Amino acid sequence: MRPKNPRPATQPRTGKPARKAGRRHPLATVALLAIGLGLTGGAYAAFTTTTASAEPQVAAASQNSVDEGKKLFQANCATCHGLDAQGSSVAPSLIGVGAAAVDFQVGTGRMPMQMQGPQAQEKPVQFTDEQVKALADYVSSLAPGPSIPEQKFLDGKGDAAHGAELFRINCAMCHNVAGAGGALTEGKYAPPLTGVTAKHIYEAMVTGPQNMPVFNDLNITPQGKADIITYLKYIQNNPSPGGFELGNLGPVAEGLFLWIFGLGAIVALTVWITAKSN
Image (cartoon, rainbow, N blue to C red):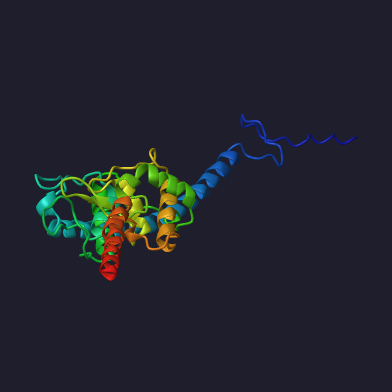
């Protein structure tokens, strides 16, 4: 009697198709995406936390400077310009003048004014460099305005010839072609530009202090302003090829010199010759 063939073992029916050996579970892709997103999010959070921890220190330092500047302003400037720098009947508003205007006016000693007059006169500076910066930071925090110029425009390495042309067109009618300054109307004057720092010259051009017009970047480009500074430093550091320059005050001073000393010398020589012949 032959033995019957054994029936092959079959898996119990569960209603679900059996998975092939080695096939990935359908949820594995979702799990991998979740893990990847989790790692990416964790790395981003760690990076932003490090960056955020450094930013408040910079902001705090800037805010400390603004707070210090506000105290200095209220103690020294608010009498004329108002507690909130909104101006008054005796002084203009400072909202929107920018850090450059404060750095120029306070950094040259023109502010605070010693007394009311046709224009603020340059005098010894009343504040330290840190206090000037704090005042500038406070005023610039009130509204946007011209900022303190970058050092690359102040190094005196521009085009002196182009600067001379720009200076003759825009500045010489008040400051004299050699930057010696000159008188204006109603007791006002254009100050001499010898000995003035490059930073203050640039700031004067962008803010227009006293009676000076504002030369924004559309009137004279930043490089053009750098060229003007180069020209002024060149004529300051190089002697006049014509000899004694009489203060660079122009033809009026030179004519007066000739009339007084030249004509006087001729008259004196004539008198001496007449006396000698007699």
